[in-house]
Structure formats: structure tokens, C-alpha cells
Length: 313
Image (cartoon, rainbow, N blue to C red):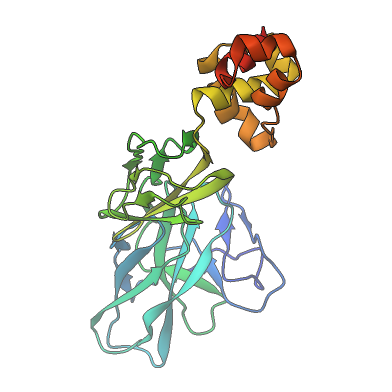
């Protein structure tokens, strides 16, 4: 079967055809052989590529080529693949890399790729190069289309949690999806003292024991076969405050006196959410306040709670 002349003879192993049957070379000016859309010569037959071992980022390909008893030399073999929306093909070396023209035999040849993207559609074809040709020809009649596995995910992908020392936390869990094989988990950097991380489930549990300001942790889950996803978790561990310490915290900052008065619950929550990370200090000393006023000495004595409450009010 004769081929229609191509517009390019020097091309980076990929020549493509427009819908109007004209041809173009996405990467011209290279000396490697190009890829032709035309069918095999009438002395040669073959099969469309089949796809196996499909993962999030890899796949294996297999096809066959049948030669007759005529001719000498070899046909170089290769695979060409591309993302469905891409304009040009990429080449893969096959195993075997060539086949004898003579022999009247069918030869299977294969290749694999590990640079694919998850959740994408691709096309692939097996091809051979006739002696003297500048373009590879398909061994089959058409591209084979396939899709990689959907991208793995972790939910929630981002979260922020704040705890006081000495209080057991409600276990933190993530929901994984689209992993190929059971995932394992890791976290960086390490969690604050007292908290533990389950590498099988990704759960966080325990009772934090040491204060630590906002720290961003990255959790990575990796499927046993393929698939990887990450989530971020920002953790704060503030020192636990007694009720008196909360009143002293409020009394140490005029804006908090105005905002919360003697509301201990609101003052404690403010310290956890903002005050600790902002570096707000507890500077108010109730006994010094009492000692500075004779009437308070008689009224409160050594009762620090009453003194702090009086100051705030």
C-alpha cells in the first residue's frame, strides 16, 4: 500500500494529521523518524495496543506485528502515547526494540510508562518503521484510548485545631478516597508531645502535655499500589489556665476587660484562639492590687479572685 507524501520528513518522532487530511509536525527540525497515521504495508499486519497494569501514574502496553517471508533487515518498534488533549505524541522504547522483516511470524512487543497524571485520558499506539521510511506506521488500525485512575484525595484537605494541655482530644480522622491499595500515612513535622499518629489510619489522638504555638503539619497518604494525597493540619497547644488565671489574663489587657468583663469561658477561649499565639502575657497581680488600697485589704484580704474581679469591674 502506497503512502500519501507527508509535508515533513524531519520531525521529532511524531507526525499528526489534521481533520482535513493535511499533516503537520508539532516538533520539526529533529532528525529522528516521525510517526505516520497510515496503515501498515500489505506485507505486514498487526494489532491495536492493549493496556494493562493501569495505576494513577503508570500503564503497560502490548501489541503484535506479523511479518511474512519476504524482505531483509528489521523493523524498529516503538510506542507513541499522548494525553487526549495534547497536540503531539511522546515515544517509548519497546521490548523487543525491533523485529526481523522475514520470518512469516507474529511478534508481541511491549512497553511501559510511569510519567502519567492521575485522572487523565490518553491515547497509545504500537508502531514500526520500514527501511527507508522517515515515519513510523501503526501496527494496528487506530489508537487505543485509556484513562488513569482518579486522583486520590484526603478530606478535609486543610484544618486548624487548638487544644489546652492536659485535656484529652477527640480523635482527629481523615477520609481517604481513590487509593489503589490500602494507604499508609505519615506526618511532618512530629506532633506535639502527648499526641500520637496512627500510620495505618491517619488518626491523631492523645493528651497534649507541652504548649506549642501554631505549627503547620503535612499529612501524606500513599496507596499500597499507587495514589498519593496530602492534607494540612495546623495545631496549637496552649497551656491550661485556671479560672483565676483567666481573670488575671483578662485584667492584663484593657481590650479584653471591655470585651469580656469577668466572663471566664469567653476569656479562656480567646486565649486559646488568639492570645497564646499572639504572645499575650498575664501580668496582673491581684495581691499587689489589693495591697495598694487599704479598703481592699480589709474587703478581700488574700482572696485573689475577688481582687481580680473587682479590678475588671
